Length: 185
Image 1 (tube, helix red, strand yellow):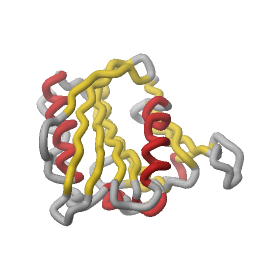
Image 2: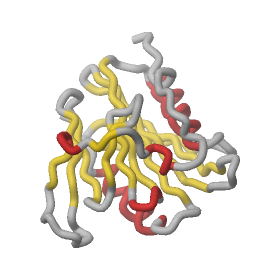
Image 3: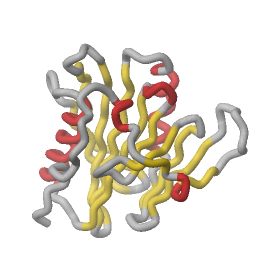
């Protein structure tokens, strides 16, 4: 497929992960899976029926639609979160890696060496690209982008946390479980 994946994303995400909180809540696509309480174990599920994927995240995080993305789910005080984008069509491994690098560059200019990897998520092999970034305003963040093509759909997920905000340790501990919860059917 010759479509460009990242080019249509016209967001001004120059400073931090909190910038990904966007336009409108995604109430219709969010289905609570845990108890309706303030307990730390309270969870919600984002479901994208059109692209056949879902993931679970802490109920204290806010889901919003972001221009160019399926969803942006951000932790309290903008301390971190996950954004997801899917597109019909299969991308080559090299194209996915370029798209992942492009996602990281939306958060802050890429600095230093990118860490490349692979991991299985929901039985699907995903590529990953990680970066420790410093935005022009001095904000530090750790970010990882994951991508794969599966059954004619390409999936990209960006996770990150802002090292300068309160609540970072909690988000840093929660993000691996959010990534492991991604289900593609």
